[in-house]
Length: 133
Image (cartoon, rainbow, N blue to C red; front, side, top):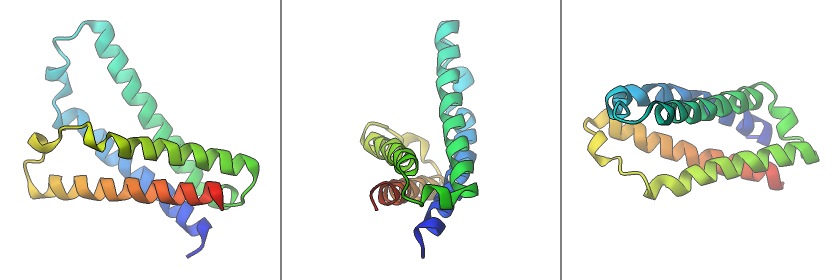
């Protein structure tokens, strides 16, 4: 499998992550959970969530649509892939900080969570390889 194919698959994987991301506000009952916060805090929370969603969407579309450009090894491609490796590496570092067990109430939620984490590792490795090869 070529690096270009891996980058394309990484982009498709990122777009798949957005499905899980779209479910988070409902599964975690954000409307109720954030309801007690001041309005500005709720707005900031939603803004951060939308910025993260937009970042994953944009880079997922770039990787899925222009994998050859990202795998080309140019300075810009390496910089973008380096950023993406750091982005997903940071997400991996947060695994220990999140207390998700109480929300994994069904087998499919646990399986989805494990699958997401495997995908985070793959994204880190693929983009890291594209940044350094």
